[in-house]
Length: 275
Image (cartoon, rainbow, N blue to C red; front, side, top):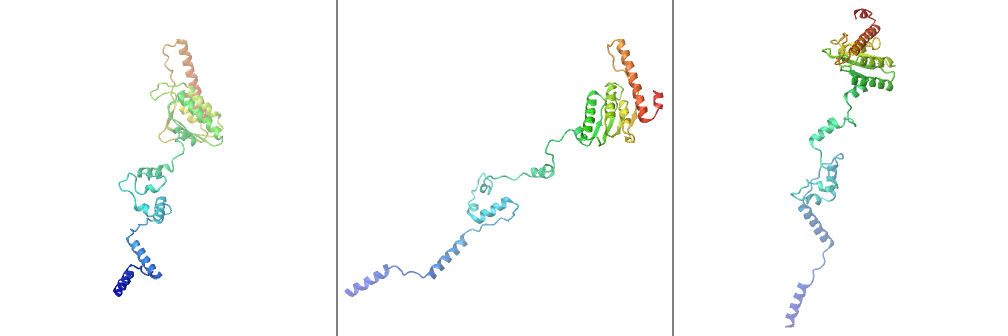
């Protein structure tokens, strides 16, 4: 009986006793197997292409290398575009229209709004007379001439003329003859060399301005015309007869002065005998 009891006690102790500690080699082998199984079950993160000039791809590559779970746990059905939440202040790319404008226009556009057309011509030292000689045109032309002389008294000034003078094509008077003489006197006071070019027509007082250019620097386009015509008295209305007579005399004097100045600048004395 004691024999049987001792055998049973030994069997019980053999079962309940802890197993002997394993060797270090066995432990390392099991750990290695565990790591292998973990790496197999772990999903592989596709690395984005590296491009140092692209901050978006560079940021994705650094996040994928340091904390790939950030890219794996991206919430679905989110209002935010994919992967933009990893940036502190995400910025959307420009639309194709904005990109096209930035390449074709924004890189070359001026920093300030472009000026008006007379200012652009003035930058090239060009004065364009394209209207009848009314007070507003005279004011602008004289101011431009004085400004160009102030900017550089040695560079030439180019005056392009396409004007019917102080009258319109139908002969109606729109300005006083003194408008043309004002521009002429301003031209004579300039120190700059003046180049005059007729484009279209130069009639009456505009013809005088064309002839007032520097000798050898007066030009006409192939289809331009230059001519003078008999002046007309502006509408007198209910003016007294004495005022009408004064105006008539003034018109005759202005005509004679115009002819004398044309003969002086062109060297054609016969003009004085025609008028």
